[in-house]
Length: 229
Ligand code: ADE
Image 1 (cartoon, rainbow, N blue to C red):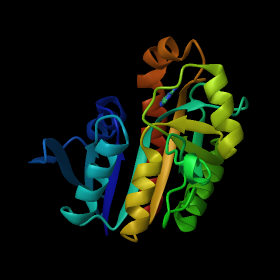
Image 2: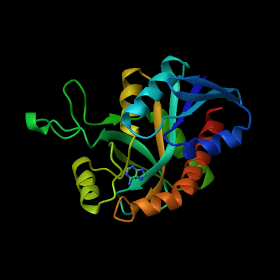
Image 3: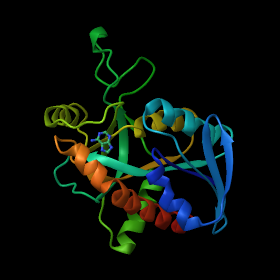
Image 4: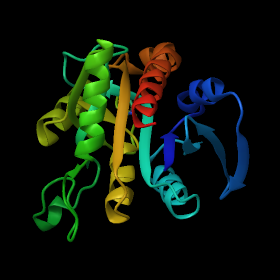
């Protein structure tokens, strides 16, 4: 089984690379892909750089060039749902692009013809994540994640995204990874730990908690790998 583990920023995959200790690095498409094995699983790990276009390129490369059969995303997110606090884990049930807007033609936000507003994640991976959380006594919230090419640091914008997509958290890559995996028929899971509340303090909070929250997400990802192995 070849598994891809993806982040958006170097901070999001560094804890994984440190955990696996030995890996090889392959350069492709102005990016680096790290390969290793863990408990019989073949892993390919990469961070895409921020945003939907970079994430789409990296997800496609992980699948088409490196042969990933499942894709797991680990990283941080801004909270919309007030029950989500710094460091809390959320796994996406489905994802939408909050900045995709052809409403001028009568379509709902997040929709393009022949697409769908929401893309659902793999239910088997979701069940596995929930099972891992339960057995380890870790609180894992499930919910809708909204993605866009904007760092949200404005309560009004956050509320709009929350209301329009019924979203619990927001970030800048998940829904584009979902589009790629859905199109290429690859089961995927998007896991995030909260780094900020997407409000006026979000920039400061993100800088403060990026590393610790990324570690929270990465360590839960290792527990998922243990369960998959
Ligand atoms: N990722 C983490 N926090 C975020 C925010 N406030 N906006 C967009 N992406 C994020």
